[in-house]
Length: 343
Ligand code: SF4
Ligand code: SF4
Picture 1 (cartoon, rainbow, N blue to C red):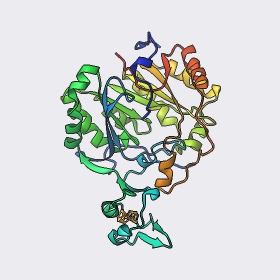
Picture 2 (cartoon, helix red, strand yellow):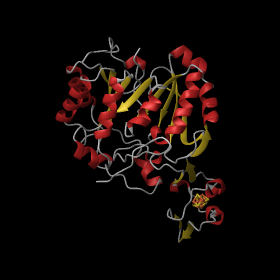
Picture 3 (cartoon, rainbow, N blue to C red):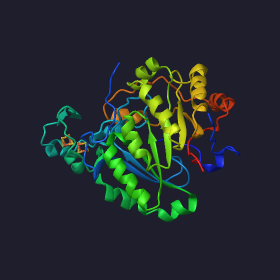
């Protein structure tokens, strides 16, 4: 889900490298009770993406994530169910939403509109009644057929550019059955597939999906488990194990490393990560992804607190220093996303 440089920014000579050698969350699994095999909850479909894998891509964002990364720039992706977002600056105090809500979740208090999220069931009635665009529901059910129909529209661009479809999130494996069915459908149509994942799921789920995935964009955040728990809410043990197994299975992987000041930036963490990655067989590329603040306003729209409010984006120099650590371990590395794939 990173949004960074396009192909022109890629370092020359990077090739696929085949070498020898707190809070708890439940892991994603098949038949996890979310939706059916043919319907899932999607919160966005982005066309002409250049930053979610090789070539021109359509990125399908599935809703729901078992992690709670404190720097997450898509907080609307975290809850598995649809939810209401509010842009209070657009409100003209017409009161239409108060009348539209059958749950008693919206009320006028003095000169403002107050929404009680405990009562809200995200039905969308208030958003439909709001002419100013101050209310919106994020996340909608879609069938596999609907998703694939959208993805197929850009087949000529994929063929021309070496692109395809990327399933992202949230954590796409949280809707594993839907993802599996969608991946199969895309492969049947000859579309290159990528999955952008945290890797936080049961191995049997990941392995079932993996045979239909041409490229994994696999996030690796923090190597020290206690710190990983502190900043993401979950252990990294399964994430690291799954990554190892994927690599042993010959699956193509682009590692994505978020550079978050005060969290994952320390050279020791980066060197541990690089040493681990260098021991994997099928990591074609490492992308160092800069922390940014583009999602901060979304927290207010969801009436949530952004915990890294004091954190500033890193300089290019610090990002390059981080990339150099990975290169010193023989890994093809660059700052930014837009993976070239493992061709
Ligand atoms: S989404 Fe539905 S339940 Fe929630 S505030 Fe709006 S009308 Fe009420
Ligand atoms: S319907 Fe929209 S503009 Fe009108 S009071 Fe509600 S939020 Fe404000």
